[in-house]
Length: 130
Image (cartoon, rainbow, N blue to C red; front, side):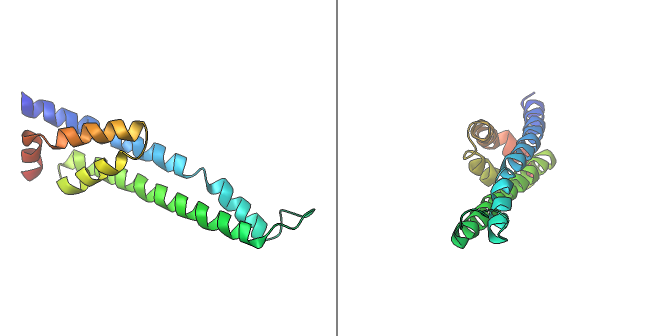
């Protein structure tokens, strides 16, 4: 019975990883607004009445690009982790992503902790080994 329960738990965790990955990608796209504002500043579309420093546009573009890229990479890693949980592959990768998920408060923290607890069970480790 424990093995069947653990398999169902892994299936459920895989679905939640997919959902959290999509949510993370959506929220990581919010700084696109800042990216477009930075591009507008650099192309002199914004600031016709007053001179806007070029450095401001550069900072907007660089910071927004970094945040978007980091968020999308994390989202992709979470989705891949969900796929690997479903396939019972890459135990260490799934565990590492579960630790990273704890940074996404509050949903990622809850999912990350449950994933860490589930992956540390001996029957689950055996499922990944086989």
